[in-house]
Image 1 (cartoon, rainbow, N blue to C red):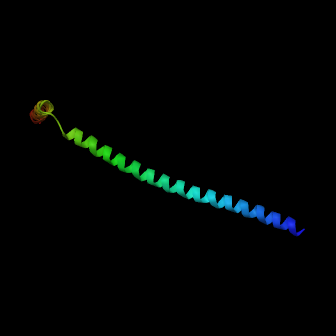
Image 2 (cartoon, helix red, strand yellow):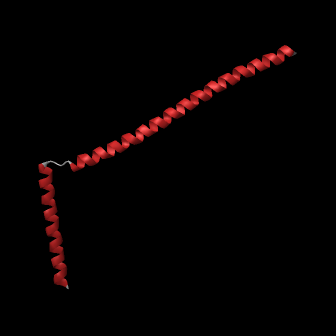
Image 3 (spheres, rainbow, N blue to C red):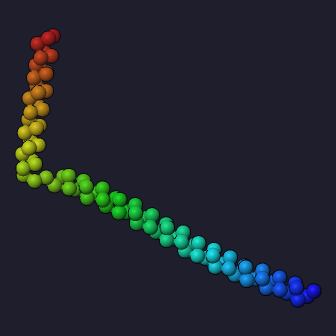
Length: 88
């Protein structure tokens, strides 16, 4: 009978070791997941910064086209304002 109890204790000890190892592995995986999430967030931030920088880095042609569009819009706004003034 004592041997049966000893066997059960050994089995329990083996299972406890396995469980401890699995828990340690799970902790490592959680740390890795956290590190990857932080890296992902940093990369997303860098990507957004790069998109913004690329948008702001316009070529001379783009600047000229933008000025032409703005001038056109301003003329349209001026026309609208003048029409509103005439109607009053």
